[in-house]
Image 1 (cartoon, rainbow, N blue to C red):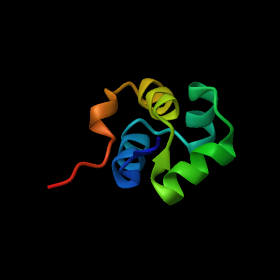
Image 2: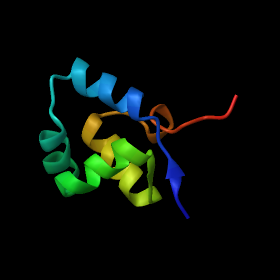
Image 3: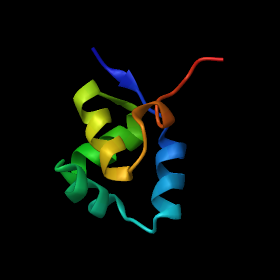
Image 4: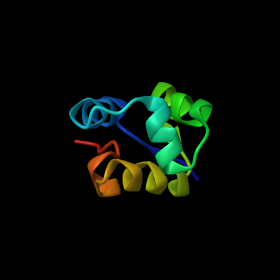
Length: 68
């Protein structure tokens, strides 16, 4: 099962917190390639979404793609 994340929201949070993708990867204990793939495809496992959200200091619901 994969989750759809909103890459733009993640990039905005990175900009606000002045973090790079590399810093995010290190904080989330993920490879830089994994973070790059998530930002490119918008898809990842729920565990990965949780790690990214925690590293960004937000709830996972703030970065998932929601259908209107």
